[in-house]
Image 1 (cartoon, helix red, strand yellow):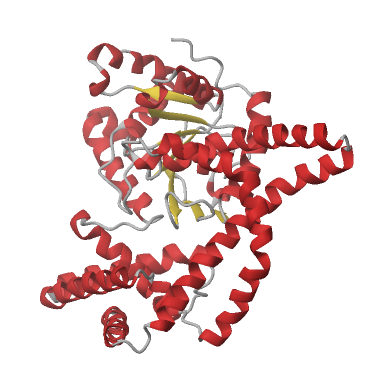
Image 2: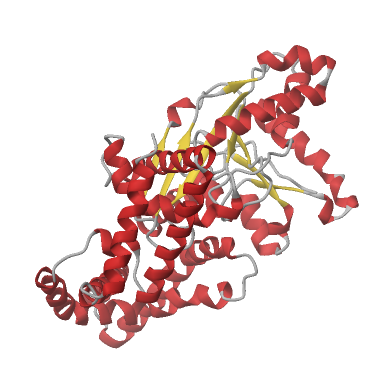
Length: 446
């Protein structure tokens, strides 16, 4: 297996990263926030250990957070397609093999780990997802030993003087799949192996287990961790219902996205505490959450509509804007429809939906520019005007984004009108009372 010189600076990587970061931070996501980047030291071997929820988008979240070229270890099955494999190697992502890949493949891991050690010795950061597999839940699973193996191996090779730094990191998405959702990435304080070296010399397995427990704790501090997967969906929904009230209770600005993780962690903490102290009231809370969620589904509404309801009179401004903006929407939608729908041909047959946003983003990086160029060439052949062609080319991404914003405004306005139509409905009144009861239950827990 040829691993190349992933530890060296790559000009192709640098150029692709500039374009990829712009598309990632400014177009694909509505808002991106990176915090704690200053916690990552320079001039030392660094291992970054993030949670893993959203396939290749997790890797990109770390890549674009840092102004350095970093190397990844990732599960080998994503390398099966030869073209994808070449792109991943270009992105400095190396495969790690598991038992399910076949015993003969496991032997290749020694080569991978040796290359990783070489990368770390060259002071280039390495990212390993210690869960080893993504999960579409706000939950951190038991960690594998990959981080510990690499870190302690490097220390051994350096006579325990390498001072490798392990950085716990957290990645949060407001939505895993939707275009123009929000992304928050945080990096914790570096962890050192110094306190574990002596124990490692005597009992490597015990030292790695202890450090693994510490690492799990520190990553958990960076994320929203819902312990019980059986009640995960209720907890996750509960966090959205209560976020504004809990934000006020914590004296933080509820509209600031970077506060969302802090607020939701507090909601989870309160729900966990209620579970421990009053199991009967906790079960009642979960049942209320399920009833409220079902009620919203019956009305085809989202929780935010009930929270931020507007009088029909105020909605008239939005309706007028939608009417006036409809021709603009048609122009943007028609001229972007092919590259917009193209990824759906692939994603509709996916067995693992967590690859959906990775495919949409990755394919969009190339399909949109290609179609824009082809469409602009068609305009050139028709008009023979460079000015008209240039105006048309520039208008494509601008009006494509406007068309998407228009479609979201249309859906939201429709939801608000639907709520207003049913505001005096007895079922809706019961739903509003149930929402208030849920919030009060969480607020009562200190």
